[in-house]
Image (cartoon, rainbow, N blue to C red):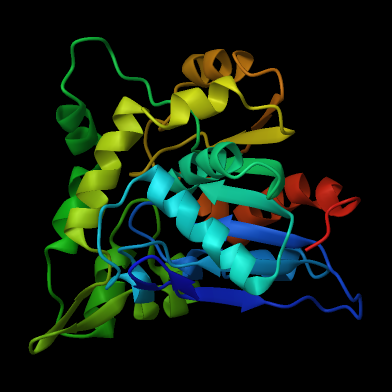
Length: 290
């Protein structure tokens, strides 16, 4: 779909229904992911239309130029929805996608009627006086390193992820289409499709929160924040529980939900995680038309 500087690629799953105007979910992926991270969600929401973009700088939208940032992504998604003729959506954001969803609701009021934030979209815990780049290096350093790597083929890329503590061989096999889609040719090998410059620019904004905080201050939409108990390396959570509760308490429209048995990735990229997310979306069926 046309956006500033080129075209934004999106995956669209139409519902298993004869409804003329089924409810639409806008599914927004994380900082180094693609729309394929939502592969399980359409199965869990058979009556919904799922629109899932590759954000600027990722997937098949990776040739779109900068600048990047939450506001730029939000504007891209507004252009996408207008091009599709979609007037109202439930926005579901994972990780950085949650930040984009909140900013979208602020910059383009009326497009979103409800938000579901899967382990993202609330301010990160950033102690005063700590360099934002140092914080993001601690959180996203391994992901940035991966983007600079090349792989001899798709099998090697899957093997890389199979060793990742948040995934493992069984889940990687289940998500084969996601990992295959994430690669693009690079000389004699293959590389991840996310652009380092896009991720670097976006990650700093995740820490500073300069576009998120004013959006949260004015947030009135019904919003569900889903807390994943384990983090990016299947270890400590991205959001400490007390910090998450304190952030959510500042916006009366936010309801906290506590997921179990998932990490920051599998909250959307496993069947149990996607089912839990879908259960938070399903109440939005009434009154949401896409």
